[in-house]
Length: 107
Length: 122
Image 1 (cartoon, rainbow over the protein chains, first blue to last red):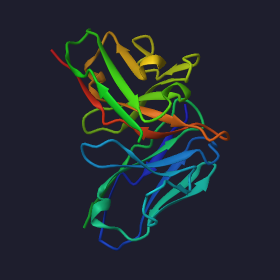
Image 2: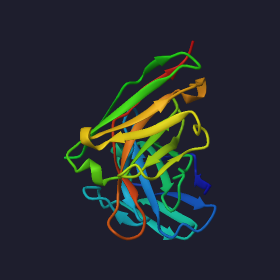
Image 3: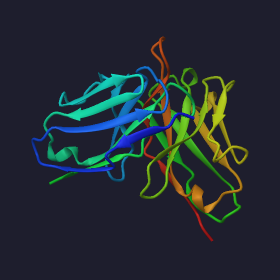
């Protein structure tokens, strides 16, 4: 199985800050990576797919980059509504493994 | 609009069985592969099972292999997960999730239901 190592596990930042989360795959997954946002009590929502493609309707302050084994998710200017837990998931192979999640809070 | 609505969750004793369902609408269900993903209380996401559009290809996570069975009824636009020999560690919100394939690369999950809670406890 492909292991996804996501960091940090939690993050506190101020409104307007640039926020970065990383995800590392245990083997080459090309660009087959999705970033999700999950708010409490809600289902995950796709923000980024194919490592860097923005899902329709998602604000442009969200972006992703990387390929192979190393990936980055960025919020360019943190907004209060971005408080959530963020997950990466690889879909190169089954099982489609997730990162452990990053809980993002406002400082 | 794509809609996935799970049902059938509830409280079940250890060793018991439960079937959860997912009703799909707003798309041609029979042409999409589907997944079950779960989330234990306060924990992260865990992929559980995959079924292809015609049920010819099925995969399970090692943690549920031999105990859970995924199936679908394309005539009824429904996805199912039969869960047997349930354990306390199976307690979770169970989500159904649709795959999307644009004809190249890999299938990816693009829509999720709201989830149904399964609690395994005596």
